[in-house]
Length: 194
Image (cartoon, rainbow, N blue to C red; front, side, top):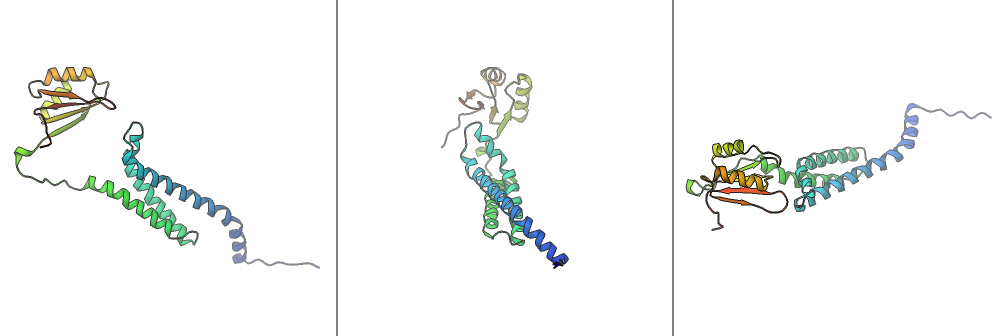
């Protein structure tokens, strides 16, 4: 009349695993696939987003690389436990390679193509912050570096007038771009494509 069920530790682990695995495994896989798709989308479109505020997404390329590497590791662990196929691992590794192609050239040494110093142009880029009004300090910093072209980012009309007055003897050509982040160019000579 009495039924006696004997569970060994292996049988109990199988019962417990069967109860919990179907719930967690799809959620993990869906989350990993969603992260992979989002990272791939951001990595692929960020070079083409040139208008503010979307151009800010292109500044996170290193984070896309790290995230893609983490996703590849997570899919590899998922594959080792026989929960997913190898395809997402390959897709995540392709995403790592894609982002690496954008990032690693930043860290390679630059090579000069010419040795003729007459063809060398020294360029200074300087983000002064749009609220900065320390014109004498900015002009002194530019004079110390002594570039052929000084590109001052976040400039205003007041910046243009103040620096033109202080640097006219070195930079007779002063031009301020229109639209977006305004850049002030102070040049010794007019540059041409020839």
